Image (cartoon, rainbow, N blue to C red; front, top):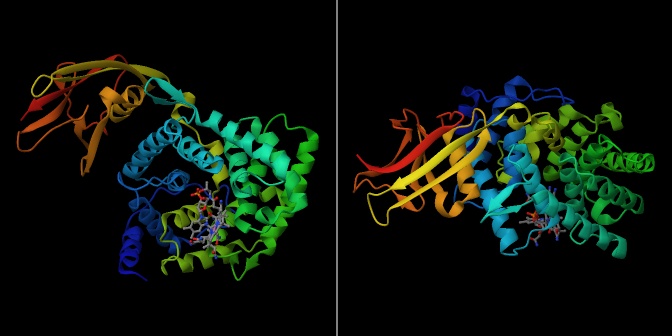
Length: 418
Ligand code: B12
């Protein structure tokens, strides 16, 4: 066991992470071993940083486990949104499965994947996913093989279904039809079968699925679930790295197989034993196995409530002002946010709508995010300058990460001296 992992396990034992409910689980991690799970989650969250390539699977896992690391979560949301804009506007590779993972990750954060603003335009990732999934389906119809892989088609079905998009049904039909032909890329990979099971299980819960499709999907599920159950091997399902996804699939699809045919407790204890060996030290490997250890699956995202579902929206005026140094500027914007939002969320919304003027940077500190730069103008310890925040004329007594804004409030950020 690495020293870092040992330390993390000790810290995790002292910390009590918010634990998701066990309602979905077939079995659960014994209380005496929960610190291993917490340590793994903390280790995964520590991999997140402003200069690290953002991984949607990590954000998905943080949200499924309700891991209380708002820095990691906010950083990933910001980077993934920026990265999707970059990929779309610069025509960078963005395969269907990747788009699906971005959609799942943003949806799990209640950050709407259909509304990503960039230079006055709106990027709709769900619409993009529909288009990319249709390209996969055309390829399957013409060549019996997807444009990318069956794994990605399975992710497409899952993400479209989580977004309640009806194209999930057509894609699920194609995936289910392929199961009976048994292409090696689908039925030869436990990982792929597992994601397919989650996608197909999700589609069976959708409205208006034609009865023929329901029948086809159920028969495909039974083949895929048999394949997964038969891959049990000394506690693992497939190999170490497919076990997380396979366990998630068996958690999600409980109504469609006999639960007694999965030795869930054995799987959990085998996985737990592998944590101190550092087998899940790559963030994505932790991200795929953690939902299983929390008794959840990627399908849990569908039922996750978002504040917008019941909270009312408020408007906030936000002005940034500098007449202290360089070119003076004053920009104002009115943004719509959920009631109960923090000033940081207002600033993020403003930067989303008008990144040219309102983009900003923060540094993490023990009091939360400290705003270092707005509109490329940064405070300096040498010049004794900083961004000072006001509600009308009153200076704020809290940082942007904790200050809750009110309806029709006017927030000013003024470049000031101390
Ligand atoms: C599809 C797939 C492949 C395809 C990728 C081709 C393609 N055009 O998509 C092929 C068959 C080529 C492949 C190869 C390998 N794979 Co593979 N692969 C997967 C699978 C099932 C899905 C990945 C995916 O599509 N993700 C979704 C897309 C949207 O995300 P992405 O980031 O764009 O995915 C890319 C990477 O995942 C990359 N990739 C795929 N496999 C691997 C493996 C490694 C080590 C790396 C660095 C990258 C990589 O290819 C994907 C497409 O570009 C995963 C299963 C899983 N649990 O994640 C295993 C998985 C990632 N593969 C794995 C392994 C071991 C390999 C191989 C090393 C096998 C081998 N013995 O040679 C080789 C890689 C060798 C090399 N050249 O470096 C392991 C990784 C375990 C680990 N701890 O590192 C996994 C988890 C399967 C498993 N359960 O064992 N793989």
